[in-house]
Image (cartoon, rainbow, N blue to C red; front, top):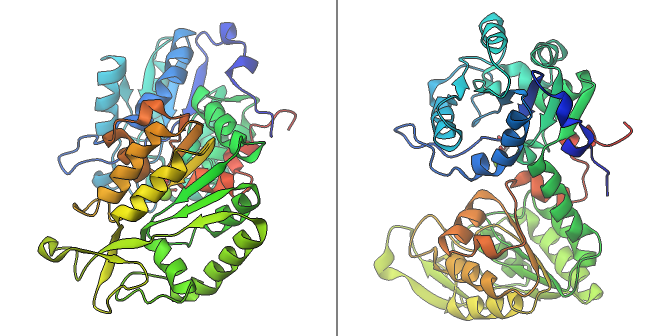
Length: 400
Ligand code: 3PG
Ligand code: MG
């Protein structure tokens, strides 16, 4: 496991008055009336922000929000996030209307040690995602020290994630980033067994590398959500009108074969909740997974599957879960995900979950504080577990 520079490697007693650029991932859901709907990512970054502010640093927070495609777009302003941050940190939190330029520089110059400012959305500049050298240079010129606490963005080789730390001599991972790398690293190290992975979500796409990297380490593989349909198809079952990936049936067959040869127990749905459309709750039925009617679509795992999944979770000494097991945002098709989330409370081992909907499900089930680690990264946690080097992590390795 990579040895990361952390806040412990930065002498905090020397940070007084030092302008410190802190990349955070405040890419959070925002309501139409501009309110933060889930502040988890803000709360998780607070320890680092408080530690730096407490050391007297001038704390410059930078994040992206959504995908505004390089243009200023009021729908993606971070202003509501600054308002929420004030609720958490106090009235002193400032907001800058841009992330580079003279006005921002003036605002920062006027700050006192220990003060906090949030810059406007980095992605209002197309140069951010391109890791444009001149743009990275302008961001880096705002500060003397770099701290990255944006695990959710560590898989993006963007200017604020790699370009800025490449330009600043003093840099470190914040508390959240370090904790994420440690917890997810445990899964790839020598996890206590049985080790179970529970994967859901709409598609296999984006999870193939993760599946393949985890498989040799796993004892149990539980599959639900839309992606399970492709596995059911791989076993020769009809999936009716369900969402599935015809061009990934072969990949699914390969994974099932590989799992078998390695002795990994695979649990696929044995029963499923189906309907003709998402908007016809009156005609929701539960059917065996090998008898899905031609006109039906699978929207959730059935009660028998939930029981089996809960049983497997109750045996796991290490567990990773990413992805809802049904159409979680559309009741009654959230029931499978909810019940399985509740079962996490009975997992005797070290459990890690990642991905926005999965984390939301764990919170709703009231089990989030009983888990080993709740990752703030969706794509980033999957790429980490796929064994890929995350650019935002690599740039903070010791001795680079
Ligand atoms: C996320 O929410 O997955 C991260 O903030 C990264 O966002 P992105 O997928 O738009 O790069
Ligand atoms: Mg994403």
